Amino acid sequence: MKLAFIIDPISKLDPCHDTSVALMEAACVLGHEVWITQASQLSVVDSKAWAYLERVEIKPIQLVEGRWVSPTPWYQLGERINCFLETLDAVFMRTDPPVDVPYLYATYILDYIDQSKTWVINNPNGIRAANEKMYALQFTQAIPETIVSADKEIIRKFVETKGAAILKPLGNKAGEGILFLQSGDRNFNSIVELSTFQGHVPVMVQTYLPEAKNGDKRIILLNGEPIGALNRLSSAGEFRNNMATGGTVAKTEITQRELDICQQLAATLRKDGLLFVGIDVIGGYLTEVNVTSPTGIREIDRFEGTRLGQQVINWLHEARTKQS
Image (cartoon, rainbow, N blue to C red; front, side, top):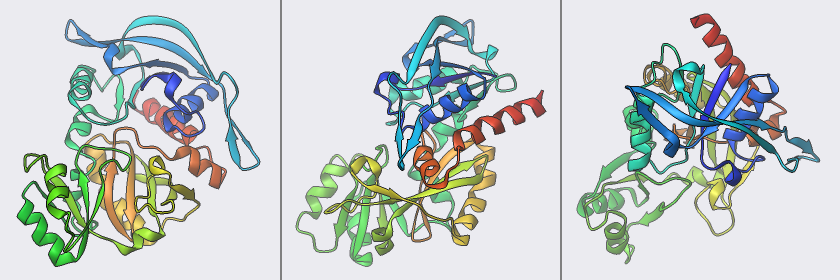
């Protein structure tokens, strides 16, 4: 196969952590062509999507005494071409959030790929439809009690009823801007005013789940099926469990309740073309559905001795072969 990955600058990626690198490495190991580009390098010409692509070879990392070690250098760039994207087998959209205006414009360009010829993972229309906070709200049997509002009094009433809640900006990533709200907090007005930009931007507010102290589980789904999971634990003095905020990771198992949640999501994810997804679960409740650049593969592989990147690429190859 010939695969393209739309990523952030490769020099800024961490080969021992980033799932994008794990997927590209797997494709190289399995003998496929791997090309990279950035969202700013996409174009539409004659109503077709094009991109400037660079050939890349990823050198595999190794597990040494329980930690990943990468060679130096860990990638090598080759020729650069201007490519009609429908000549590829698949395009992975792996640019990190936020989903801002340039990001949205990139998804509009990707709409000009005929997906009967070239798969886009994840589907650009699905990415636009699936705000990573809001998307979970349709799965009412899976989520904790949640509201979305910019109205201070609606938020106040919810927090007073629940006693404690978590406020999340709708467009951030990696735990940015997540706040703990408690009934009677003297800073409540200021917190809500800042987070909602004086009542102009809605935020998500979820009832606080005490089980969060036991971790925030990331489950990776491929075509709606769970293929691995890890538990994320907060660092000292921090209530957020995100790896980006200094949290640690631990080996975990997927419970029956979590399998049920995955089953609740599966058909909708497939319908929306969201083939590679990471969901977050706390205490048996779905809190987020990550569709832009979900990560966690490297950590799961380290704990489980798996190669999930190769599993993803092999699944894609088999699916594309059946399609043709």
